[in-house]
Length: 352
Image 1 (cartoon, rainbow, N blue to C red):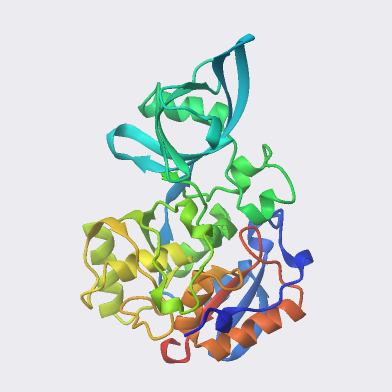
Image 2 (image 1 turned 90 degrees about the vertical axis):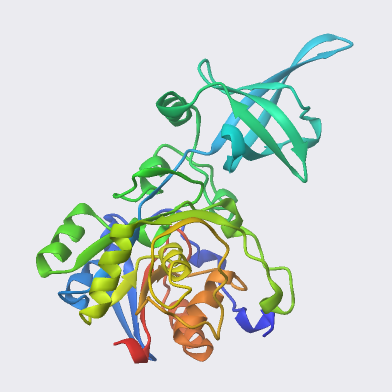
């Protein structure tokens, strides 16, 4: 299975740099097997059935991009230099793995000051990253980070514009609860409180799980044979209550529909034995054509990058030829791509 099998041409003008407003007015491509219908996200009320269960990733994106200064001594005296830091993921001992620009000038033991309240000490520099320890913890850290940090927009958006105040709400789901992600579960960005309430009134049920999306989600696949690719690990939890809810819906004949690839990867990680079970820890599950789905009956997701592991995932669910047809249709009809883009609801023929 070759990487080039998952390539397609995407005009740059289709990359969304802002979300639709209101959120649920984004377009929605419904694919039922090979049959495609053009709709909007608010039409989900007519598409989901009583007894369906949506699985939502309630992770909360932290404002992980920080601008700071470090002070060092030189022959001319004290010099203050700027440094840009992007938090990647929590590390053992309360530290954080992070990127820095310029990393080559950052030294172990240095203090980086981000605001009057927030600073960090460089604990180690290795492998193109650094580990830092902040001066605050808990709620104090969260509050100071919210003031000093900016949202970590995906590289394909950041290349076109800088993050701003609007992104602090735009790049966060309305049901975000548990801080830890440095990228949003973007299919979930389309939901509004009003849409969720309409779905509840129809009899659609909801289960929340947590997968802290890491920056590794944007890493390119560099191998020719995709089956040899190694996924990055991310921390997640499927509680006993969540597992029981999903199992009960399956037993009753309802459909399990994860909202986003992160929710899908997590529940399939929790069902590696064939049945959904509680899960707590890291997962590096890699889903590509040939994968057997034990839980998910369908998937709501955005449109993904060429040659990405997420394109491989949707190809596993729908079949490679069907996904090619779906993406050809999306490009021809001007759907907006990636994190702030439009959505799709993918229902395999066998799961209708």
